[in-house]
Image (cartoon, rainbow, N blue to C red; front, side):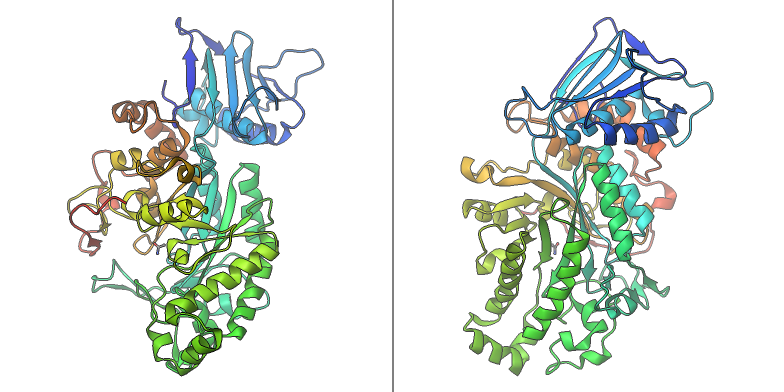
Length: 546
Ligand code: ACM
């Protein structure tokens, strides 16, 4: 058994019998299974050369896809069953998402070559006789990609959607804006991408590095690119959650539209898109005009990300420096006018405005845990990144929570100690550390634990200048994360890491190889995966957990 994430129940035939496919297998898709059938024909078809034609009337099909809404108890829409025996493979989902997860399991059972894009000559295909019953522990199993610090072109995002889906994850959170770049076309504010999507150069390495990469960097998604990404994800039962970060992390927007900044304390007309890493001091001015500007941004965003795709819209809300508001007579006047509690009150005022604005449009706000500081509307949710504490507080207060504590699941952090890790930053978080991550910490009450929607791994890309670097940081740890959020614990607090490592070694690294993933090999980085002489920002010692 080498499935990742490990299914809840899998009973293999003791005699090791297998179902052998002939040269032209036949597929039978029941009502509602058409989308999964299309995906199987395209993906398995590429790897095997099969056309997977539909079964003729009364003819037996090698692979049968069924939806059956009944008899699953309290299991959700992603629950599925697989029966493989002498008459072929039957996949049953409670709903289309479950059937799709079943199809991913089927692909794993076929072996690593099922992940190739063309058939190997002479390859024969078979499946083990097995019965599988499976469903996820959490409904939010995500990956956040920071496409602002380094842009990931559209093709790369589509590839990541496939990688996410192959690991039974179901949320892609796109961090679309930051000080260093604005990555989504907004028709009514064209300078956001004409100006805000480009920077002249980038620091090479983390903040302490004296080196610069003088190649200009940039790129953005057109609105049609976004529609394509959203549709591609939807076919794979992955939701895309967009993030527009405010009121901090906004220098790229201010560079494009200087009136968005605090013009009485800084000449924002001279600002460029930031070329350094860290937290820029240039934050949005607390004016009605700025609210109207961003309402315009969100209006276009809501059209691109319909509620069925993501009821949640992420507004950032993290790390907003207050120095400019302290120094700005206009901001101080605003504090008095609004009657809010100083500069922190201004930050809450921004978030609360969009909380209400999104709720009026049937959407739910989600933001980084700093947004808790000013109180939130009922439907708002929190991404808990500064440890578990924000998530626990939010859940105890009745808000939904996505756990993504930086101490556990920030995949930009280095995977091993030692000088060979490329541009090492943060804490050492090994494959085993990520495997042992639990979205529900032990000290949480049962009522609060029920508010944990799930978890996501976050990939911040300051030191990931291309897709290969993203792969290196994300893999193999994303496979461990996938099991942490999909598979129920055998016993509370217990996971069998040795068995996970065995499944990685016997099958999953080979799957990643076939998929062309530049993962970190178990023995450490390959020579071309190193970045000798480029400084990172390692943090020594263990951080407090929680
Ligand atoms: C964050 O890492 N600033 C959310």
